[in-house]
Length: 309
Image 1 (cartoon, one colour):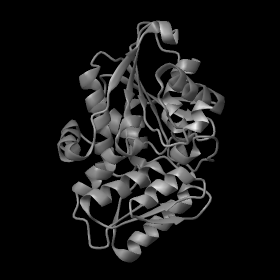
Image 2 (cartoon, one colour):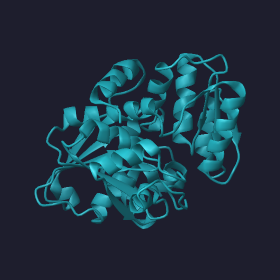
Image 3 (cartoon, helix red, strand yellow):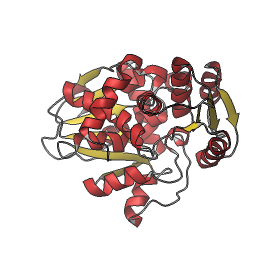
Image 4 (cartoon, one colour):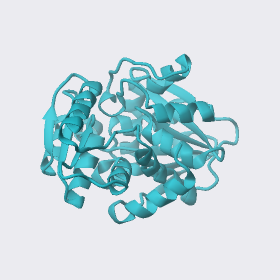
């Protein structure tokens, strides 16, 4: 588990390259909740998701070899690594599966990174990226299962607590668990983290049931960002240590949350980015009386027409 000192060091290291994203408070009259809802708008981060935090921290914590960096991604992590590589002037090779939306592929390619599309799902791209890193000697930047990546993602929680110190519960979407693992490492016992997953991507939920990471099916509207085949070992260990609570929900609730964000706030969020909010708005997460709930809106990389239509 990254320590708070690790996360503070990551925050200092990556500060020149990321944005401190805003936190806004939504009154109960707009949500039907007992108390105000606090949103951290991380979809406004560089490249449209929280992922550059971990990507920059991993790359700035290591000596990048001449072969550059290699990463596998459903889209957001690959875009973050490609962007960081361009900023830091190193080579990047990004492997994505066939389910990665064309909009994300195009943005990755536009950075100048070498893009390889292949395999039906993320896990096939991951295996290809690991083989390529072994072949070339490039630095592997894992999407969610490296300590430096988790420490970078933990800076989301560091900022959120500074701006909203009275939160009792924080809802966060999970795929492989990098964002959850980093945020839980920061909050520890000062707030309860609620892990939210689509029913068709039950990565940490099934890991918790089986008491170990296991292969899971991946599908539904958020699979490109939350469709990890297996929970990260680091995130799983943190979940077991913290007694993490998982909430599952259907795709319809995610779509409703995307529309709510657009209709109420004029915020565009991709399905994975709206998943945590969906748990709160749909009632899938029943907060205890008096809870002060925060939510991370964590990604915006989708066709805006799919939200605003």
